[in-house]
Image (cartoon, rainbow, N blue to C red; front, side, top):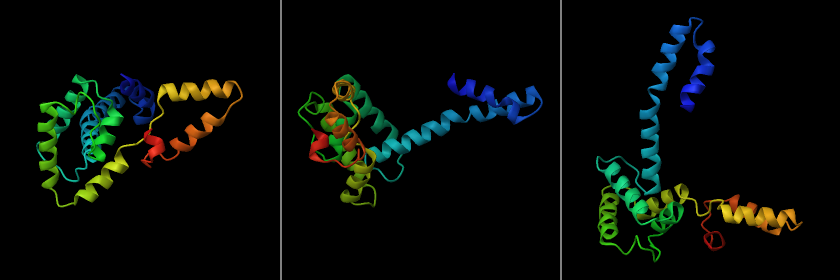
Length: 171
C-alpha cells in the first residue's frame, strides 16, 4: 500500500500522459517483491555466515525463523548466540528440532570455501550485539527528564557501535 501511494506521487514525473505514467509505475512497483525478497535472502545468509547461494538456504532460514516463533526466541539474541555458537539456555536450543537444524547449518557452512573464522566475522558484522530495547530507552528518558543524563549517555555510547559485541553491550 505504501509503495503504491509513493508511486502515485511520482506519476507526474514519470510521464505527462496519466495512463502511460500509471503503466510505468505499475511495471516498476511489480518488480519490488522479487527485489525485496532477493535482498532479504542475501541479508539472512549474511546473518548465518553464508557467503554463497545454495538452493536449500531459504528452507534453512525459514526453519530457523519458524522455530524462533514457535519457542518465542528473541530475534537479536538468537543471532548473537549463533554468531558465537554459544546457544543460551532457552527452550529453543534444548529441542531436538534445533539440534537437527544446527547440524544442517554447520553442514551448509562447510560447503563454502570461506573459513569458520570468515563466517564468524561476516556474522559479527551482520548481527548487532545491541539494539535500543524499549525498556532501556524509556529508563534513560525518564532519568533524563529528572536531570540525570548518565543513562542516556551510556546508551548513546553503546548504540554508537552496535556491532562491537563487547561484554557491556551484551549485558
